[in-house]
Structure formats: C-alpha cells, structure tokens
Image (cartoon, rainbow, N blue to C red; front, side, top):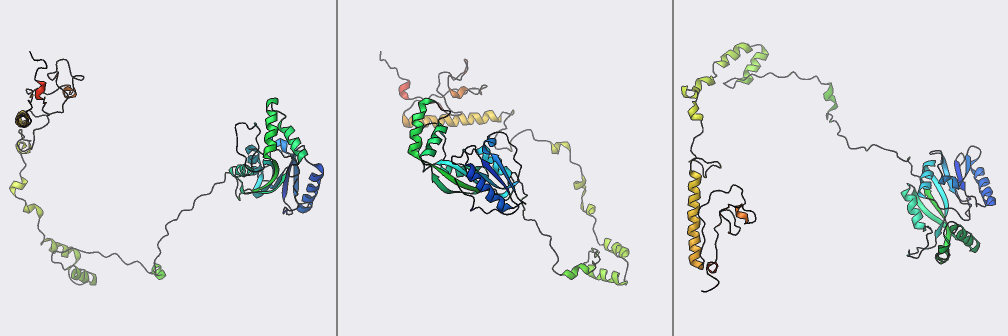
Length: 377
C-alpha cells in the first residue's frame, strides 16, 4: 500500500478515491482524513467502489483535480482501457491520476505454455495510459508481493479458470514474480475532443511610407489629346492657360492631318472572292502521301511502287544468301485485319493460309531447303 502524504493537495480541490472491496480500511481512513485536512472545507472528497467502473457509470465530466485509484489496496484490480477512458473524462484539464496495479517483475518473454492470465508489465501499463490520452505518465515506487499476498492473488486468478490450467498458472506466477507498482499520469491542459483553428499567415495591407500623404488632396486626372504633329504639350498648356484655340477647334485641325484607312484599299482588295477560289482542290498533288480515303488512284500507284522495291530487295537478298524468296502476289487489303497474325486468326478463305505470321508490308521468305523434297525417289 502506498501513502498519500507526499501528494500536493491544495485547498478547494476535488478528490475522487476509488477503492476495492479488499482495501485496508485503516489505511483508507487515514488517507481520507489527511486529504480532507489539506483541501479544507472548501474542497470535496468522493469515495466510490472501483468495481462500479466496470459497469456503465456516470462520473461527472471535468470535475476532479485528483483521482486516487486503489492506493490503499494490497491487491488492486487491473485497470482496463475502458476505465482509463472514464477517468480521463472525469479529470479537469491538468488533473492528476494516481493508481496502483499488480504487474510482472521484469519483462518475461511469452511462451506457448503460458497460462491464460493477463498480467501487464510496467511498460505496457504506461503505454495504455498514453493511448488513453494521458501525458507525463511515469511509474514510481514498486513493492514485491509477500507470500500471503501472492497466495491470495493466485487464488483470485484461479477462481474462474478450469482445473487443468491451475498448476501451470501457479508455476507461471511464481516464476515471474509479482509486484505492486504506483503510476502517475496527468490530463492535458485541454478537454477531450477540443478543437482549435490554425492561424495561418495573412497578407498585411500596404500602408504609404509617408503618413502625411493621406492628408494631401488627390490631383485632378490629366486629360491628354493626340495630335499628328506631336505638339501635345504645347496645346495642353495653351488650353489650360486660356490662350489659343479651344479643344474642339484643335481636334478639327488635327483631323485634317489624318488619313482614312478605307482610302488605302484598292478595288481588288474590296472584291469578294468567288466560290471557285475558296474551294478545295480535287487532286492531292500538293501532299506528300495519298489521303487515307484516297479515291483518285494515287494510293494504288504508291502501293505498286513499294511492292516493286520490296521485290527488288528480296531478289538481292536471295542472290546474296542463296535463299529462294516466296513473294506473294499483290493481295487486296485485309477486311478483318488478322491476315498477318497467322493461321489461327485467319478466315477460311484467307489467301495467306499456310504462310507464317508476318508484319504488314514484310516479304515472306522461306529457306532454299524448304522447297526441296525430304525423300529422294
């Protein structure tokens, strides 16, 4: 059991004490009297059974400055994640949680023969506190269980388990060693679920360098006239001073010097083009290749020229390598598009049946021995 004399209670604070049914009543009464003396009559102390937290409970939200959980219990019950979630909601921002829990001494490695008894290490309990939202979580004083406490804890662990596992449970608990550890955690200085707007940099309005410029009257917008002889400045000066001709008269004089753009156009420029000049030519003599849908016969001529070039190349290759080329006769264009893929894809009436697969436009060549008989008669 741990003492509360080292805790810094202040007058007017609210404290929640959680105790189990196996708590030491003498130690609990002593701790309660000490806390009431520290917080004075303006404070408040509430004592509740720890077992009620496993059921739906209604702890006031953000109400307590301190929560002391099972500090007076020799064998405290384990704290689950659900209990930690209830406690952090009940604490005020920057409130403190002090709890006591049984943990394994050291860090045992799990094995397949370990009995089904859940006992956390100090590091696992600290991780649970952090995942529940607590900050500044630390483990403090630890006290090893003596034989009587260990025997009582083993009896409680074996209560709801079958007889087959009891021997393994006892062996596991004795081998690991158990200790009672005190933990301290704090709620952050904000509420659970609090939101805050992010302050991004904003553009500052540009202010004039000279503060006296705001008091100066705005100058009247100048009006400029365009003249052909470039005497704008003189005309504006004369008009503003009251001497010389008026603005209307000056504009009339200036207009005499301008040239009308329509006078520069000739009769050919004004003539409307006829439909024949705008029509598209029927032939494709100006193009590098025949059109895709050519109907003037140029596409057939180009194909015949390409075929003659390929035949000449095939004859040259056959003469150099002594390979007899098999040049198919010009075939019409493929309607299905599968003639070059091979017999598996060709139609039953395909003129290329029996030929190997080839690329479009490629000359099909067979070796000289392919035309010779395999059997000599």
